[in-house]
Length: 254
Length: 264
Image 1 (cartoon, one colour):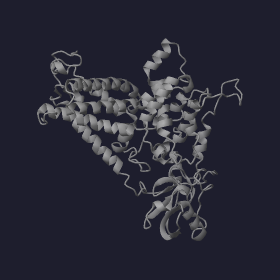
Image 2 (cartoon, one colour):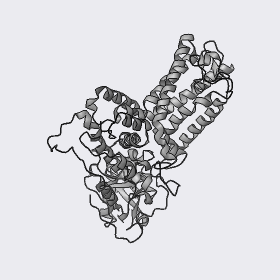
Image 3 (tube, one colour):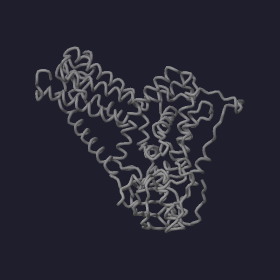
Image 4 (cartoon, rainbow over the protein chains, first blue to last red):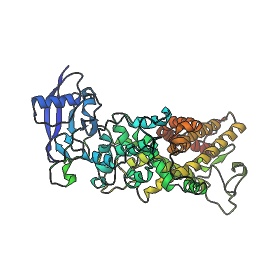
């Protein structure tokens, strides 16, 4: 059965703006993105929202709904009380282009700063032979749909704009972990994870994991294992001593 | 996904949505940090009292917060680990002071506890998508928080402490198998050791540091077992914290005579 819901939606360009109130029809089975589209169709034709698949797989409709980073297309209206006012705002960490649309180019810049997958010299595509158990850890991270809600919610950059140059954010620290764990990647990424991409800034408060729509265990399976690999490299004198005594390579790519 | 640089000449911070509210969350986001703060504070208060309480042994029970007892002057002979008391008559302070730094350090640098107290005590952040009150943040990238990286050393120490608590429990089982205190110590030893084995450093050491699991099948199986425990690390951290506090209090109450029924 339909009802009239109260919505407050951020309207404005380039960061300046205000929360605007709307009363809008809601029908059974609808999600927040449906309501935003109804607002466009009936009351605010110039309301800007980025969306694409409406199936939780493209990562386009990231927004903040009642203060929580969510995908608009995956947030059911049935999870709210009918008399509740629903506040919809753009992701806070990124600059606003218009209304709910943010400029997420920070993330693309960080992605470019990470050296890509590098197989051993002389091994051609098609010649890779890997056991499933060797790659399945990395495969969890490949579920990422790049909605960037983890980077948006991370307080390291959400609350401290000045940390953006030094910190890649959970999305790309996870990418580094994915490559460092890959059995066929030969680039050693531990020093750069700590020094160039700001792994030490992470204080593992797990908000990235909490908001991930793909339920990737970002903190437990990527960030903490990567922190432990950095400990091997930089902060463990026993490992250092063992490397010296047994003349081991400093790489832990065992 | 398309992206376009915003044209506004304003500084980057100004280009974000200029929302004045610290958070727009409408749920009870403050409950987790508040409950954590209360539980951890209660634990710290209890631990401080327990350290300075001298009723830590009543045969065959040994209070976990004072085990192992390493000082001759303050430890009854039965309470000494294999009769071993390396510190002589000169040491007259509470025995807990000698060893509690190790399990305390293990918990303080534990990845779960870090999350919990960064949120509850340092409000960094108090909850997801709730602004923190600090104007500057460098996290664990520099002194003093960079010292959190010594967690694995405390893990090695925690393994030893866990084994000693298991030894205390087995000793009690042999001497007083029907005693309630025996089973309190056994349950506590199991939970403490499960918490220790579920540690992220343990997971890394078993095989997490490897990239070719297939070349190390035994370590891979160990990693699988630790990973299952690790998924419950938070729960084990909290349950074992309550169990160690409960077991310690139980032994002290028996030692004081407050609990004195026949099978105590």
